[in-house]
Image 1 (cartoon, rainbow, N blue to C red):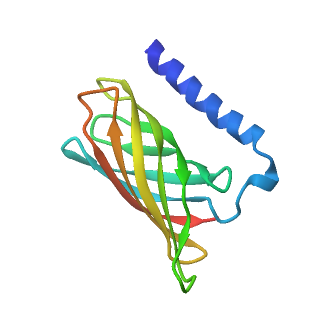
Image 2 (image 1 turned 180 degrees about the vertical axis):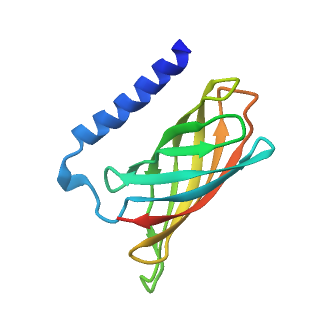
Image 3 (image 1 turned 90 degrees about the horizontal axis):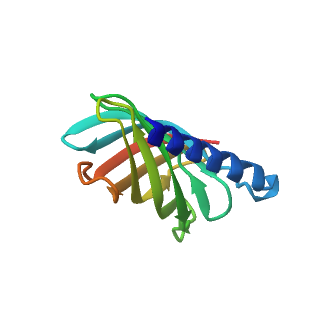
Length: 154
């Protein structure tokens, strides 16, 4: 329990530090979103909420919460984003790669660190589709997860 509390405090501290240290002029309007998501992995499907908060042109904080059968899983990812526009400028696809930390509060309460990669596809000024792959590096019992979802941009 103490290990999970330390991980949670570290996670919340890093979120607060990034938010306080990032000047308002560096925050990119339209880079943030929040919406429903589905996570496939470990032989189960979990629904949840996935979000993205742009902290600079190329860095994003991506907090999430999922509700698997065995408790609640929450955490965040810090990603490097590479926005790409098509030739007509009609949509924006943003591949990303980074690291994540997740805490599962189920029977086997565990904190997992992992690598994450994926892409955001901005369909309009207000709608984004998201997909990512999460590969845990610290817990051999946790399998690779695939998350897909949509988000409202703001």
